[in-house]
Length: 66
Image 1 (cartoon, one colour):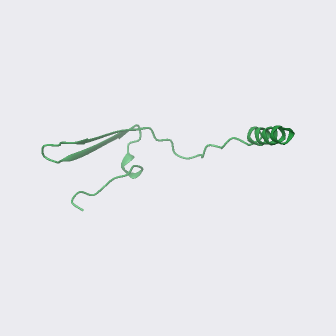
Image 2: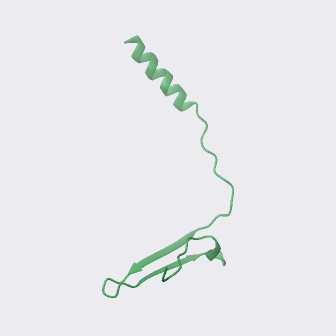
């Protein structure tokens, strides 16, 4: 019984003693994306909007017909 108490106590102390993860500093992007597929024609479309004017450099994109 003493062993279990020691094990639980030491584990809880090690978990509480960890430092929180630091947020990486970098550009802040808030994007809103819409993805749609027309089941009748099979056509798809994607729209991305953001407060950043050149959002195309920071979001994932695909090339059609590949």
